[in-house]
Image: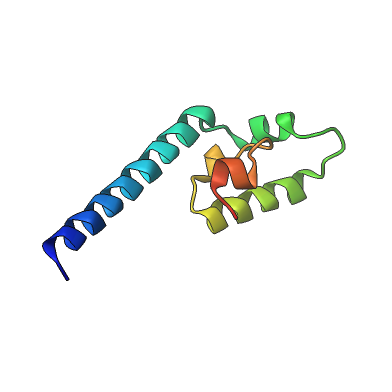
Length: 83
């Protein structure tokens, strides 16, 4: 492997790292930590609190984000990077 290819590979890795870091920072700014009570207050009327909090926990665990930063308005693709 040439030194040019190594430099390009390292540059790509650094770019990906910086993009991920920026995306994480933007997510944290958009979704500040909220309590369970605040989360439930933002849910649609009639939402079962036990189900809503269980889904919140599953989303946080699956996407490796802080539980307190999962809001009812969090979008899977745009905010959490699911695809």
